[in-house]
Image (cartoon, rainbow, N blue to C red; front, side, top):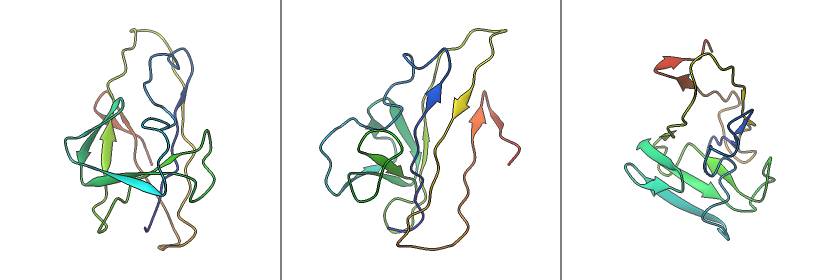
Length: 121
């Protein structure tokens, strides 16, 4: 495993509507399970590449599992979930992001988009 994003969603006003925000479903994964393009990941869809739900290999931000966006064979993965929102409401999305301590590169990065617009970084 190379670069890893340990990712969870904590969304104000939407927490109950975000499905599997901390990647705890399916549970009991040890050490990891691969999800490929087009396959559902309990609320998420793998849009491109591969991703892995990782068990207790490292400490997750919330719960016991996290998501490796680098997938297998360095096929960097992209996931999405449609979350219903209301016009005029403000929402806060939080991510916990970390890199695999056993793999490079040193600098890790990821992008977020909302309603078709990418984040500035």
